[in-house]
Image (cartoon, rainbow, N blue to C red; front, side, top):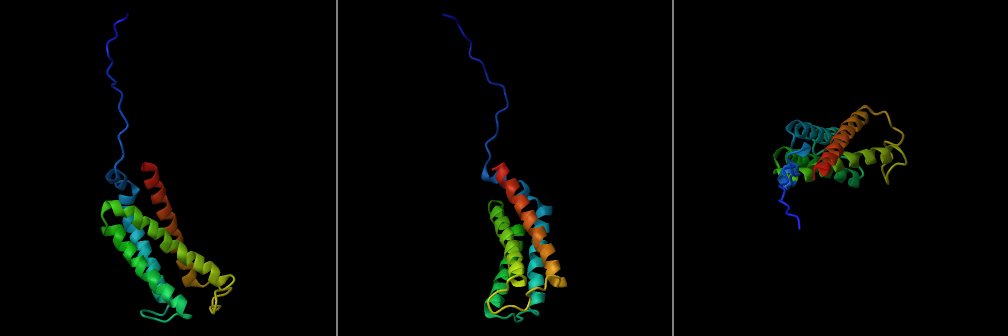
Length: 155
């Protein structure tokens, strides 16, 4: 029988990731949160301008309601990105992606095939406010997806 001395493992061990640690990554970065909040408010502002102010009017009714919902959610997302507890910021970024994606899809549908009872913008791909909207929403979508990807990797 041989006598073996127990060896002590001195290698650094991987630390376990806690939700708090995950939330300190890109989702918690103040510059990214400020940028996301500004872009989200930008989405809301663009749609308020497009509907003719607030309360404004956008017909048909379902499009007007969609604008109101988008504007409200966009402002709530901005507030969540800035003020929500760290654990809830990833959810804020997920909803921010929706705030960006919804109007992007609406833009394509309203200018392409048109929407029921809403053909005013069909073929109007170069409307200046619409193009600004595409840029703001595209940037918000890219930022949100990058932050969510980073948060997923660090989880």
